[in-house]
Amino acid sequence: MAWQDQLQKASFRGVEFQVEADDAAFGRRVQLHEYPQRDKPFVEDIGRKAREIGLTAFLIGPGYMAARDKLLEAVEQAGPGELVHPWYGRLTVSIKDDGCRVTHSRDDGGLCRIHLSFVESGELAFPEAGAASGAKTLLAADALEQLSTKQFAECFSLDGSPAWVGADALAKAEGMLGTLDRVLSGGILASPAGSLLGELGALLGVPANYATRLFGLLNKSKAIVQRRGAGADFSTANYQRASSAVRAAGQFQPAARSAAITPARARLFDNRDALAAVHRRAALVQASAMTATMPLPVFDDAVALRSNLLFALDSEAALADDVAYVALAELRTQVHRDMGARIRASARLHDYAPPEVLPALAVAYDLYEDPAREDEIVARNRIRHPGFVPSAPLKVLSA
Image 1 (spheres, rainbow, N blue to C red):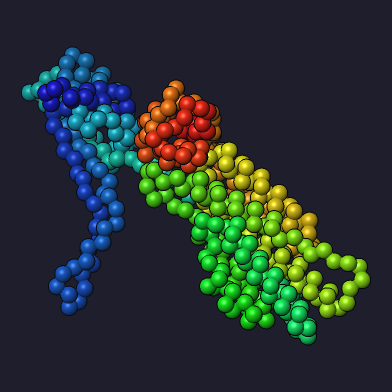
Image 2: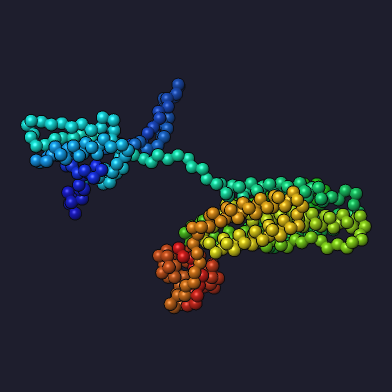
């Protein structure tokens, strides 16, 4: 195709004209910084320069005056307008100050030339207020963490207790850490054997230190798996990790005790309850913080995770005192609000049955025209071998 065939008919706000020549200015805005005793300056790039377009247009023919007046009317309208440039296509521009000059010549009867100067027009954008729902969830999780640390320090004590009370607390703490390590598999929890168990006795002597180390051990929202490549099934891993944290909270129940017990045994049971509560809340803070920062690309998975997490927060609130109840209720509210707002545009799951046994690569291409999503199909449906996807209903994303 010849270059003449690619030219577009020039117009501004729908008024057509002929173009004799054009010029344009492009570039960057820079700030030059020169310093004493330095030979070379520093040039600071502060953004792209506004593009300026110049046109030498003409109108010709018996009705050129009427066409001229129509173009002048378009030029004098307020606000930006659409320029169809012969070489650059459609542009949104504004006329510059003194950006339209008309010339007539007796020698060129039936013709007038118009010199037009435009500048590209951007959008008038102002900062918009929006609800930082994820940040509010993190703040509510931090508040629950701080309160739980304070309450654990108040409720757990080994001072003045027999040695067997301390031994019981040590054994229970070791067992609970082991439970967390087992349930929170997949990298959420660093190995407690090397980080807490070796100094468990000293930490329990100062309960606030133990609670602080426990919450820090879970990494909170740092447990999020980020996308590493087109085929990385990061979303499934994140849902599984957050769900594991919710399940972990259900592993620690209040201790059963009889009505008539000695003061020492009462202290033993109080310590068990305090340990169970701080481990439950550590897991709930972990799960809540993850939901605030992890992507939620799959609607069905997100709804299931939200339902389980809210139920766990309600269950913990039923065991809490008035102060902790308020903190748990606030965290529940923020989790529900944040996840509800973010999953509206998430993809839905639906059933799909391949017509025959196919490689996951072919199924991914048939569904999404993206072979890199084969890992997603394999992981979600627990397919044993990616080269042989059975001709059976699969759970796949709508997009």
